[in-house]
Amino acid sequence: MSQYFDNVALPSNIVEFETHFLDNKFRFKTDNGVFSKEKLDFGTRLLLENLPIKEISGDILDLGCGYGVVSIILSRFVDAKFDAVDVNKRALHLLEMNIKLNNSSDITFFESNCYDSIDKDKLYDYIITNPPIRAGKDIVYKMLRGAKEHLKPGGLLYFVMRKDHGAKTAIRDISDIYNSEIICKEKGFFVIKCFLR
Ligand SMILES: C[S@@+](CC[C@H](N)C(=O)[O-])C[C@H]1O[C@@H](n2cnc3c(N)ncnc32)[C@H](O)[C@@H]1O
Image 1 (tube, rainbow, N blue to C red):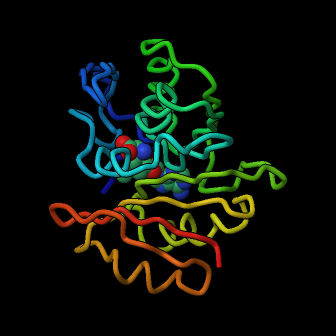
Image 2: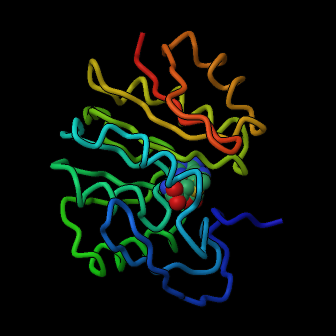
Image 3: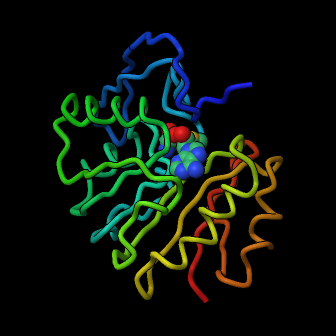
């Protein structure tokens, strides 16, 4: 069965929704075959709400960016440069439209399977992800564990995961690399902050 992140030729049906974050209005174009077509995903909103927005600056990787909610919303509030990557070409096409729709700047986007197309010398202050559970554990762990190679010293990985999707197991399974802290628990979702050991 095809998944939303496959680049399959699902008929296109671009729609638009409006959402608010910290009293700012955002508009997003979405389509069939992308994650959370109807609205800002609850887990992603929780992740954004729990980021230390006042402290964030520097270089940020929006890993598995979809149609761009994390980069586009955060870039309104922080002085930072974003790289946004995904395997889903349709999502990246929407992201390009959404950057214009929201007058966003400082967002570079490109297709990448996890970190595969990211410059080996490029390091980030923050890697932020709502990882693709449906892509399977191998991809999710490649994203979480792989952050180690792409974070500056002192850099942080933030991710959101449902408890029933194995959040506690994930924390345990990456504990050789990171000290993790659950910074929010709400409606079965955990927002997790990881420091390199
Ligand atoms: C849960 S969605 C999150 C999307 C967006 N960041 C949001 O919060 O709305 C996970 C995203 O990861 C992408 N993805 C799946 N497998 C991937 C891979 N191997 N490398 C990069 N991105 C991937 C999917 O296409 C999807 O856009």
